[in-house]
Every structure is written in structure tokens, then in C-alpha cells.
Length: 386
Image 1 (tube, rainbow, N blue to C red):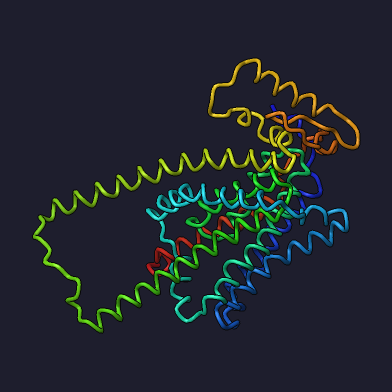
Image 2: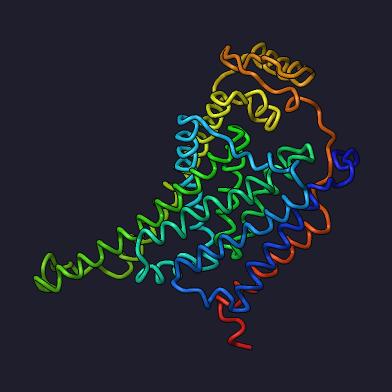
């Protein structure tokens, strides 16, 4: 029913599709041609690749002229909002880990392995710059800055979040990273919508990559320390005589441990998702965008995981409908919990719904999926068997 009422695709969605195709051209084609391999050291090569992903963003801004510059949402954010955004990233970590566990059953995490190998000769600070600072700035400007705002111009806020997360996932070029990158993409898009500042997603992105890199280097330090200790005191230090455990018992213990671990991750992922959901509500309140976020996610935003009387529910819906009909320069709307927030009238105004999918966007999606398929075939050695 919704598709029949949608108007033709707007210019912004077409430009977003062109950006997706250009990103494929600049990153994938140049990588496969060996252009980036000539750049050394490794951390500089990664930084250049990240910078190249920003080229389509400048093309988008040039074609759209000055009217699209505000779409980057380069605005300050309150300290508590940034901290809550980072907490959202921490809360969804178990869900990301669960997605990674599932995908590694079918495909290896080649990107993580490659980075782990290359990091041996790469200084920690340089790796942080290449893998945390650059992606947090360049990828967020391209994804949560340009793509999300471009898709938002369609008037379909929920669909804009999904399309942006999909494009962000496709940029990673392999199905293992695509899966959990999509989850991260949805979370960061929602937080940006709730805070109206790209600074929150930049901090979320930086924190995730910085923590991963720091943990990786720490584990390498621990391994080196253990090796040096064994070489100094002998390999028998700290060893004990292991009892002879039957192989079937050992296999059963391993299987049971795996099952318990999976159940634990699932439970943590569920409660982490609930906590992240509540934190987004707090971010929206602190940023004065609570009523706006209820219009973005109207079906689930009033579900508070506690009993809500019918009268209170109807009152919330009534206030949301009144806010949408309000006109003027700015409207003071009482948010949940009797907190007054100022919501711009242009946000509350009804926008004509437009289609998002267009030939340029479809071509970009097909190109990235085709590359991911070829990448998986190469990883599994299919081409070597031909």
C-alpha cells in the first residue's frame, strides 16, 4: 500500500546511488589493480584507502552545491550525549559478537587475520590513526553524514536508516564484516537521528576500533611476555601433569562449553539491545528530539518494557499527533516525563514520501554484493580448483 503513494525518486537518493558506485570504483577497482599496494608502510596505505572513500562525498557536495553542506550534521553534542552514545556501542557489542560467531561458521574473518599479521611491524600509534581515527572521520562523513541525510530527504526515516546501514555494510566488501557492520550501521544511524549530531557516531566508531586495536596489541604483548618467560625459566615452569581424560569426555566438555557460551552471548545480546534502546531514548530527551524519534519509530517507541495504562498511551499518541500538526518557526512540545523540549517545525512538518531505490543505487548494491561473492570464492580457494 505504501509503494502506491510514494512519489518519484528525489535527486538526493540518485546522488547517493552515484556515490555508492563511485566508492566501488575508487576503492575496489584501484585495490584490485594494485594501485594501493605501492603505498608503504601498511598504516599509510590504510589511511589513503579510507581517504579515498571520502571522494564520492565531495562529488555529492559539489553536485548539490551549498544546499547539501548542512546534511553533514557537523554539530556539537553534549558530553553526556556522547558518553551515552558510546554506552550504546558497548551495549550492542554482544550482538555484534554473536553475528561474528554465526558468520565465522561459514566464512573466516580474513580482514581481522590480515590486520593481525600486518600489525607485527606497525607501531601502535600509527595503527590507531589508520584503523580508528581515519575510519571514524571518513566513513562517518560518507555514511551517517551524506547517505543518511540524503535518504532522509525521501521522508521515510526508517527506510533511510536501513538503506544507510546496508550501504555501510557493503563498503566492507565481505560477508563476515557485512553482517555485524549492518548492526553497527543501524545503531549509529539511530543515535545520530536521536542526537542530530554526527559527532556521536564518530565517537562510537572510534571507540569500537580503538578498543579492538588496543586489545589486539595487548594480547600480542601477553604472548611475547609468556614466550620470554618460558625461554628464561624453561618450558616446564608452571606446567602440571594432566590427567588422562577420555577423548569422548573431552569432546563432550568442549561441546557443552560451546553451547553455554552461545547461550550466554545470546542473553547478553538481548539485554544489551534493551539497554541500548533505553539509552537512545535518553539521548533523544537530552537533545530535545524525543518527539521526533517517536515519529521515526512510532510502533516501538511507546513500548517501555513496563506496564503502560491505556490512558497514558493514548495521551502520548495524542501529543505526538498534535506535534506533527503544529506549524510555526519553533514549537514547544512536552516530551515524556513532563520535560519541555523545543522541536523545529520543519522536522515535525509532514514530508511527501518518495521512493529511495533507483537504478544508480541498485547498480551500486549489485556491484558490492558481486564483489563480496567473488571475495568469498577466492577465500575458499574455488578459483584455485578451476
